[in-house]
Image 1 (cartoon, rainbow, N blue to C red):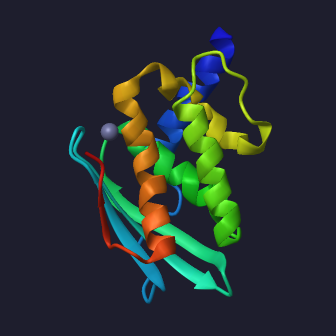
Image 2 (cartoon, rainbow, N blue to C red; image 1 turned 180 degrees about the horizontal axis):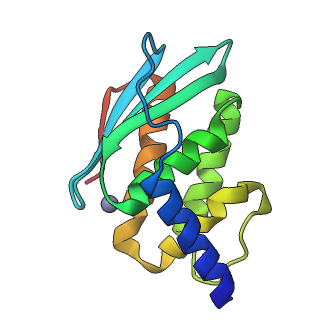
Length: 149
Ligand code: ZN
């Protein structure tokens, strides 16, 4: 278990230091801004949608290691997926980070499992879920700004 935790930590650090898909998308078909005032995390998610599929996704922003790593892992995880697949993935992700330590992890979460330890730190749950709430807002195109109170 200790080895697994170390591996998870390494992956989180790697993604926070070298975030994947960290850029703007010129001419994005959707975008939303997320803010977590509790921690000061800010993220802007850009999407290029093609026939209901996420053809491209990228983000910019600043925040703690957890929020950055989560945004980076999220963009990798949902690229190429349909809107509804991304929404279902968010549901499973939310279940994981709000679950109890030791709960079995849904295997379909893949690499996102590295953030499972977040459930032990309730104050970090918003950091990890901010990028996902922002993605949801961009997909629904209902609101441009999300603030997690
Ligand atoms: Zn944070």
